[in-house]
Image 1 (cartoon, rainbow, N blue to C red):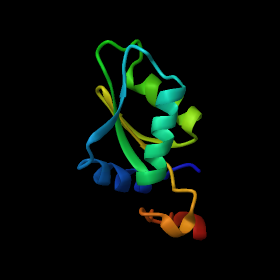
Image 2: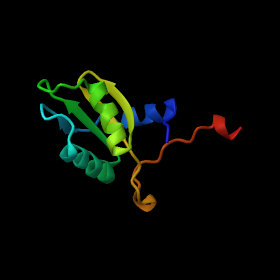
Image 3: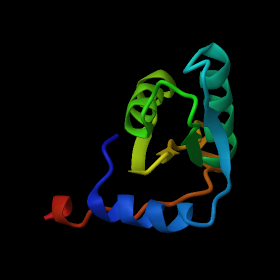
Length: 106
C-alpha cells in the first residue's frame, strides 16, 4: 500500500502528539527490534521511533530498513526521528481511517 501525500499529511498530524516508543541504538536493527516494531504497529498502527546517537544508522536508513522488515510505510523522517504506519491486520479493530484519494475515482 502506497500512501498518498494527503494520507501522509493526515498521519503526520496524528504523529505530532505521539511519544517515541522505538529506539534504534548501537545494536542496530535485529530480530528483537523488528518484533517490538511489529507488536507496536499491531497495537497502535502509527508509531514514532528515534535513532540514538550511538547508532550506526541515520534515521532514514533505520526507517527504510524497518519498512521492509515490518512491512509498513514510512510516514516521515525528521532529524533523528521517524514515523511508521501499518494498518492492523484485523479490519474490525482498525483505529485509523485514512482519507480516500479522490483523484483515482474519476
